[in-house]
Amino acid sequence: MSPNTLLTQTLTAITPADSAMRQQARARLDQLAIPHGALGQLMDVAEDLAAITRTMTPSVKRKAIAVMAGDHGIVAAGVSKFPQAVTVEMVRNFLNGNASINALARQVDASLTVVDAGVAGDLTELYQHNALWNRKVAPGTADFSQGPAMSRAQAIQCLEVGIEVANYLAETTDIYATGDMGIGNTSPSSAIIACLCGCDIATATGRGTGLDDEALNNKIAVLDNALAINQPTADDGLDVLTKVGGFEIGAIAGLILGAAALRKPVVIDGIISTAGALIAASLSPACRDYMIAGHCSVEPGHRIALNHLDKAPLLDLRLRLGEGTGAALAMNLVDAAVAVLTEIATFEEAAISQADTTITTPQSQENATS
Ligand SMILES: Cc1cc2ncn([C@H]3O[C@H](COP(=O)(O)O)[C@@H](O)[C@H]3O)c2cc1C
Ligand SMILES: O=C(O)c1cccnc1
Image (cartoon, rainbow, N blue to C red; front, side, top):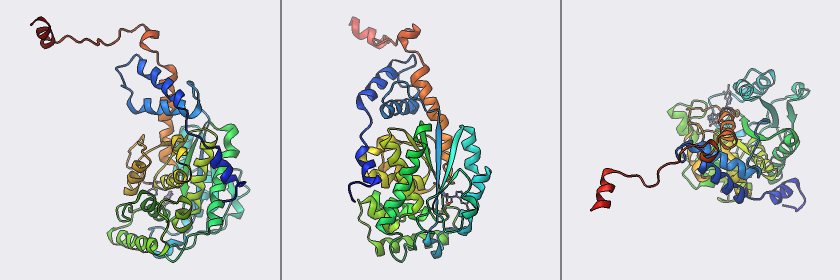
């Protein structure tokens, strides 16, 4: 990588979240007028937000969801239940405001940006739409069951698309969420997870949009063979993205890197977004600090990837959709985490009696007198 590209500048700008601010937040959370730790995972997110934003009063009001779209040559091997045309059709649906992500983004008052990172179909008539970015790297990846999905230059290009989106939105955004659209994209996601988490491809592969047993077995065989042909370097995110990735997955990884460089939180959606998160973490381990895992989907590889990133998902609702839906839903809980940190009084502030540290049970009284 040459030193002056957007990617290298962004990687250089990423530093770990602030541990002093994390400690300060934890100290306050420990003193809240509740039984110790009683708000559970919301308190962990509150601590993360303080460390990410370097303030005890983080704001996550201005929410931006970016849906990265791209197509996949590997659909020719019969790995998805739906035809490739659905990718374009769903992009149109997003722009008309009628998709699942539109409904859930409205619910949390989040903006929606749709990025053509590599859709196979022609979107020319839609580019006039302000919410759609034309950053088509190529009309779909190559079929990675035959050779690499993309060139190394294209992998860097799609990462930089995501960084560009993060930077463009930065001025009006407190918190990002990732989303994806691309028929066939659970296949590259499972392949990325197998490579970067070091697990068997069969354990990381699921039914996607609803494959039956026979089609699932075919998907596993296709992916197993694709990994044997491509031999991605197991711990090299750029090589893995190049050989078995997708343009929208690279753009998701770039969005995460961009958010981390800007010191803003980013809520990660389902298996496709989490595959992007693995690529991002492989390029910059510190960027993991800025990720909030929105949910855990039904796809078996998703749990493996979240464990590898050491991220506890906020929701487990049997979702298996993508588009950013799980991340949008989790934004409600991120709002709640801010309220926990900024609105709840401590024992001292609210003049509430603290827990007894010398609890007297009949047994301990007996011990004391004997
Ligand atoms: C109508 C429709 C809307 C979607 N929205 C998200 N996906 C999700 O399903 C696709 C991945 O599954 P697979 O790898 O099995 O193709 C992606 O487009 C993902 O975003 C959809 C899929 C369909 C059919
Ligand atoms: O985990 C996801 O987000 C997912 C699962 C199946 C299909 N599309 C997306």
